[in-house]
Image 1 (tube, rainbow, N blue to C red):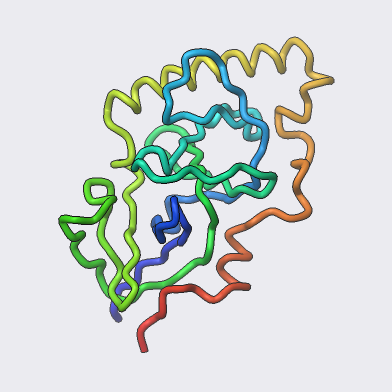
Image 2 (cartoon, rainbow, N blue to C red):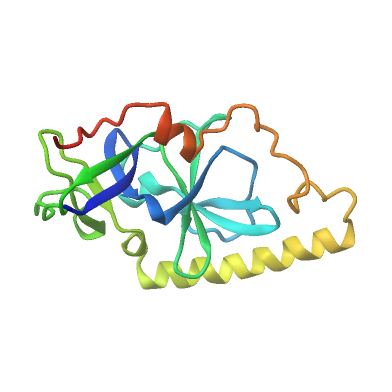
Length: 198
């Protein structure tokens, strides 16, 4: 049987992109982000995800693309980073798609060239990004340092005032629970824009 790539497809700065589905754990609506001093320009802030400080990247800025206007339902992709979860701001999460066969090589003129695993076959190819290539080693080191500091601050706040910060630690449902974009909705209720082979 021919191998298939299972992809989560999204829009980034007007460009159709994708990530391997197994690299994304969940999709959340936009939430309040902590912004301590000294954040690098590619970092929007930190999301308190059930008591864990998750760095949220301005993904479009990494590639010099227009950044999305943030609203209550701007999607946050929570990706499985090398050592910690990583939040990715995108314009829209569109679908889950199964692509038959291996990915094709990335063209040299592709905007996402060094950060891509390959492109999908077909008339409308989509660039499949590699999560581990999005950040330079120095960027990753700096973000991990800031994440550790933010995690310490968060844990101290929760310990000092558990009653008022119980929601931040994950014991309450998120404010926008009624209309989240979930992986289940994308995989079952929308048609993928990548056509599967016969």
